[in-house]
Image (cartoon, rainbow, N blue to C red; front, side):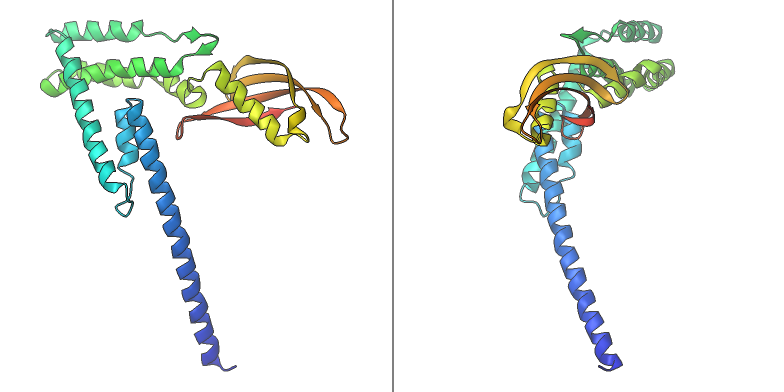
Length: 252
């Protein structure tokens, strides 16, 4: 084969590679776009309008749901505007020093608590965020309130705010059942004989930087068919993107 023939074959192969890659890329874009549409709808259903707008704005123009996504963004923005107006209307007119005292006390009153052994990080984060959201429209109406603006910046960057955000991103706010089911599903997926699984005990053993610590004692058949008693410890971590809980680590 001469040199020109070799060059021709290389060009043909390169063209085919680019064509195949573009097909995969197109499918990936479609999948990501659809996922964002689904996540955006879920966020609006949960009345998390800001998160919904972020996801829906990522829906591509080629997606058949694009027009509906734009309409939902408009609905979500109107809901946010209505929330801001309601918040502003509920706060009486004050002097700047009175605003400072009012919002500092409101911030300090927000506390992290537990419900059924589950630390309520989402509720904690949302409550702190609501205080900051109430300050924003006041500053928009009167930008001269420089001390109030500094207070908002200080609260937003405070240790309390950072701890709430870190706690929420790692632990979320699950139910006891959610954490246990995630671990049981993991066991069934990885056992030699999933049908033989018998749970003896299960409980939350606190938290670590890796997530929720879950202990499960169980019986299951090993590779030789013998029923054995085992104990596994799981690190279960929150996934903010799809609002799920996943096993991060397992210790036998």
